[in-house]
Length: 525
Image 1 (cartoon, one colour):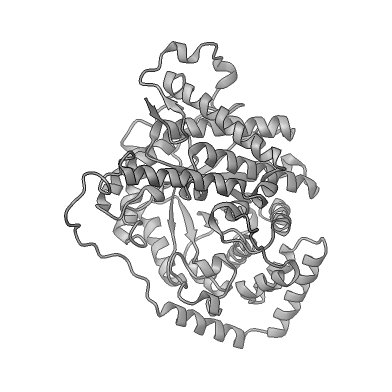
Image 2 (cartoon, one colour):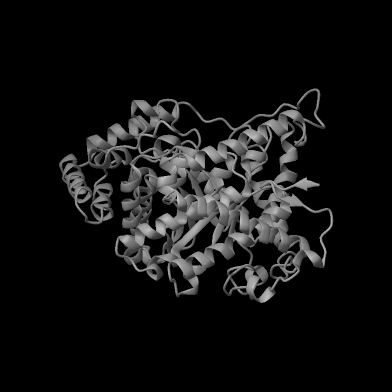
């Protein structure tokens, strides 16, 4: 008998006995209704498909802007911005710590001038933009708002998402800046600011994707993500917000693996659990507060550098799992991403994968076609139980932050990652092209390369910016930000003034570092 990625048994045959005593009214309901097992919207894709996003960003803002225009011309429905590591960590491109990393894994954004170039010629009232940014999420959102204002776009018309999920950074990824308490304060300030200033913006994308990339099982991915979600909701309520004021703008971000059946069950279980948490634990009355809306990205960790064209098949299967699972938006990885940043052709093929699923198949013709399946419903129930068990363990430790400080989630993920590595090394887990069906000699491939001169170019831009701007105005704005951070005022308002005065991302993050300090992982990590 085979086991699922979460270690649950998969029966060779499922029949009516698998669902004995199973109540479809309680477990399923109708699409678009509590507990949302069948999807968050009544019509799902029968009226229009999911939002097709492509994650892109590299080098300079000019280069990334060119790629965005190419993607829009190819038919993408939403942009998804990748930032380089210095930007993600709140450092300017000319900071010594940024050396060698500028523009490598995403676009370098140092100031409003870069953001202006990044979205040049792209009407911000007509696109939805997702930004994969966490610790400095407030800064990038405000820069986006400022560019929108320059375009004459009211903030009430801006739509998109900031990832803004710093708890998973402590668990699995590492691009944190401030300690957890201050990070949660900043996130709550973002919730409040967007409620008033950018009401259509999704204020956080609570992410399980990166935990899955680090080795989390599907059950761990959902459990630890929803546990983080509980922590964010608690923090927002403690800051004075009513749950139904902010919860409708919460969104999530998950992975889609090649194990299609378990992934479909995972997404359905996740919706059911979150609906129950919001309704029963937090008393959310607005159905939109109970909905688990999520973006999905196909599994980068399952792509291989060997025989990279085989990744096209993997991505298609993963995308199908996300669609059958009821995702609201989807990014399909390019087949060459295990080697380097995607080429233009590879990015276009990734988008075409979604378009074939949406317009050449019948998967959009009916809502939740797996409903009532002996196998899927049984797997959904089993996954739900496993996820609740892990959520309860986190809560018993005092919640997500306390569990992070004890190293619980990180340790659990590391155990599953080690097990996967052992299975691949032994051949128990087949990876086509890696430990089975290999080639004696790989075909040559020419990856996209980032010009190392970008770092010097960004440094020159920064030097010119600092010379030409009103530095006294910048210092006054940064001082106002420090005072807000020391007190209880919403830091986003003085932060916006500083960015508008051409303060850099690094300068703004350093002003907060001066007040809040930085996070140092405990020895147990």
